[in-house]
Amino acid sequence: MPYAFKLTARYGTGRIPKGWVLHVASFGKPPHSVDIKKALIGAGFEKEANTPAGVSVANWNVEELK
Image 1 (cartoon, helix red, strand yellow):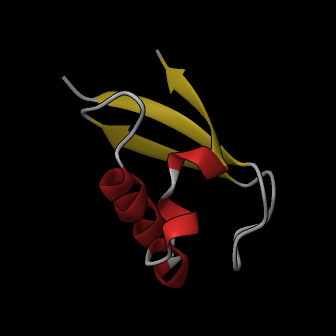
Image 2 (image 1 turned 90 degrees about the vertical axis):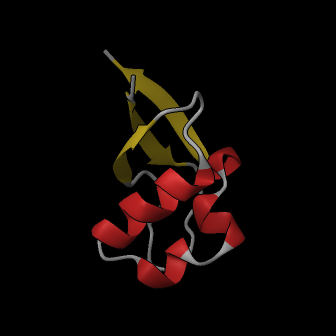
Image 3 (image 1 turned 90 degrees about the horizontal axis):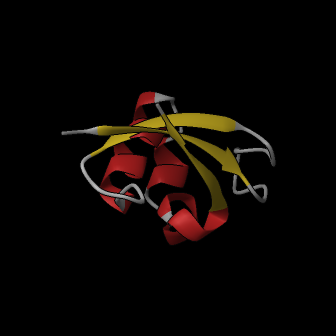
């Protein structure tokens, strides 16, 4: 069963500003970096999606959506 998450950027990373919100679907808790990467690419942040800082769950405030 997939989970839905709201990720809020803790820091500015590349073109992603602090406080920017990303919605991610994942089969894991917390969301896997692969799922964050897919969501970033879908949002037009391909360069940031290919950096460790962009896909690290530690750089995001994660909230599970019900």
